[in-house]
Amino acid sequence: MTRALITGVTGFVGSHLAEFLLTKGEEVYGTYRWRSPKDNIRHILNKIILVPCELRDAESCYQAIKAVKPDVIYHLAAQSYVPVSFTQPADTIETNVIGTINLLEAIRKLDLDPIIHVCSSSEVYGNPTEDEVPMKETNPLRPYSPYGVSKVGEDLVAYQYWLCYGMKTIRTRMFTHTGPRRGEVFVMSWFAKQIALIEAGKQEPIVRVGNLESVRTFADVRDTVRAYWMLTQKCPAGEVYNIGGDRTMTIKEMLDHLLARTPMKNKISIRVDPALLRPSDVTLQIPDCKFHLKKPFRIFLIIGARK
Image (cartoon, rainbow, N blue to C red; front, side, top):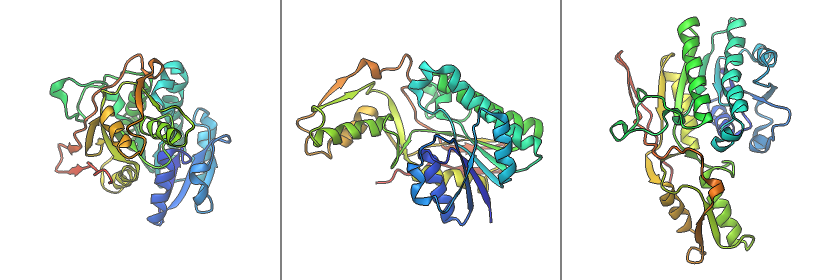
């Protein structure tokens, strides 16, 4: 039986990944911080094993890895909210980069040999030029936020540990994904919550928005975690992979999809809130999910959006 460890198992993606791995008959462990809410995994708490771990503490990482000795690690834990990275850049860098180093160092010092999936982000690319769309793994890395910078660091640290120590790291650059349990501060959940509050008479019929012209390619989180698992089954270490959906639209078009489903649609107005605008914004995210290796191997990781 495969022993899988998910860092950040209590989070949005981590909880869905834990569910998926259980259906594959894997033994699932998950790291968590003592103050982490367990709402996302409450229904599977009796099926997984939680291991306390603070990524920013090297000794904590070492003890967690020593206790589990995993066959596969899915490293998802991160400070993942872009706007917060502008107000807390040092914390974002420490959590995402130093936390990843602490994890990899623990594995190296324990002389273990797991497959290690390191979750980077499409934010590493920043805004591409017109001739760079759809975006390939070979696109220049031009991050537009401290979060993007932290994911470049995490991405390249994982690559370096493969080069220097032969550690079986696999990096993914996931594009926009959503689904059940998505935090309310993220765009689709934020819009949906406002519409629900309006329907319930608890908010005036105004949806506050940021930049509606940004272009995103959406995927469902349940397809996302299936792609992560596929990578650990089929893909060689040392590589990086784009993962994305097949529904490309502006944020306004996505909002229109939500508004079309509410009986209040003719009564709701839209208002741009300056507080929701970022100092710099990634406005074009369209992935090329066909990865071409020099060796005779190809994998397609474009995943269809669920209806």
